[in-house]
Length: 86
Image 1 (cartoon, rainbow, N blue to C red):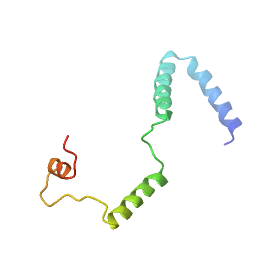
Image 2 (cartoon, one colour):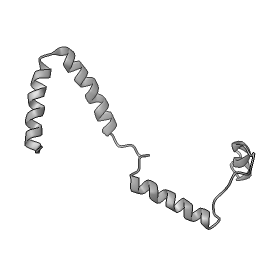
Image 3 (spheres, one colour):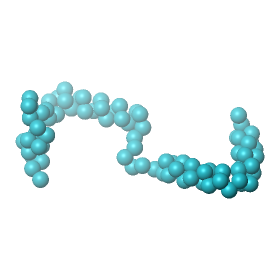
Image 4 (spheres, helix red, strand yellow):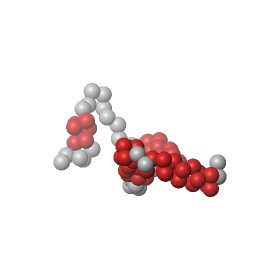
């Protein structure tokens, strides 16, 4: 479907919804959610970035640069052992 066809369908449907207050309220609620989801999230990464990060971590682990929890070690002890004692 072309952009022109999408625009025509969009405006045709909007004119129908605009005549019904209940539908307009539902549409506005959905639009707010849709716009909020479009906002940039600085923590988001692409699929490629994610797998590149995993690959770098695997390479670091292969070079012995990683940290491992000892058997039966809890997270607090692990963090303290690695210098995170705050």
